[in-house]
Image (cartoon, rainbow, N blue to C red; front, side, top):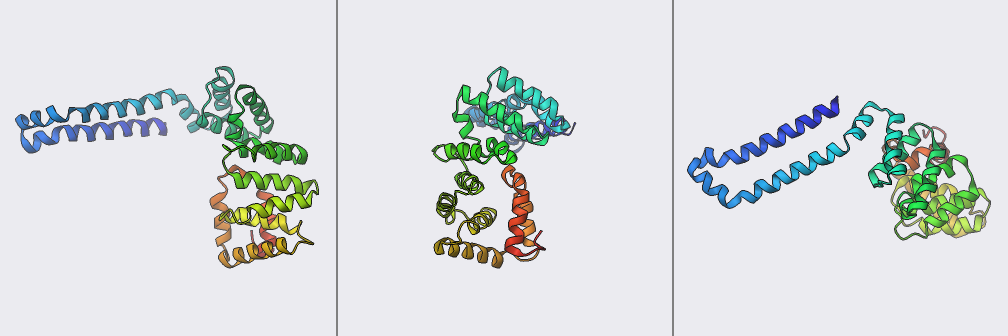
Length: 270
């Protein structure tokens, strides 16, 4: 209901604003001069009508999607999007993102893996556009070798977004398999590439476990940890974590982030 009300209000405001623009010359200059004004500026009205029509067409096409989201009907949403994507092959970044989020909300991580397999059959480029989302099942299962293969592939893709997170996940997979030298090299390569405090924390936390005999790595750990401690005091770190919890990667790694926070800030950190 809220979505429909907002949609109606949006159209009402836009139409009212357009009517005011159309009538303003007549109110200020009179009808005779307004006709002269609009005879030379009629393309403005055409552009406005086209934009309004385009927006309404977009909402019309996605009406069921928005309605299901508003009702939080996750199963209905999944069925709707699976029909669009898996049956009709109507791919799109928005649809894929919403479908993966719906799988996460309903705890259907195996469905994410099935979707990955299906997209690889259609066009594997779609998988590399969502590396963190499709990496969720590997993180949840703690399958280190599969995690290494997946993120190892993703980090080589030039079109892959979130490269720091992708390489951190790859380094994490190496740590889990006790491939400490390889993991250390990966983590050191991204230590200076990010200003994201959560990424800095996790890089330092993993490096700490792989830097026993490496002075350079130990120095990097110390610098990252000290910088975080000086910048985030008291409740500020909790607020930063809360701000980033909307991201699936941070959500999935919440337990590890909690352990790392206590390591960096003390037992009462979170």
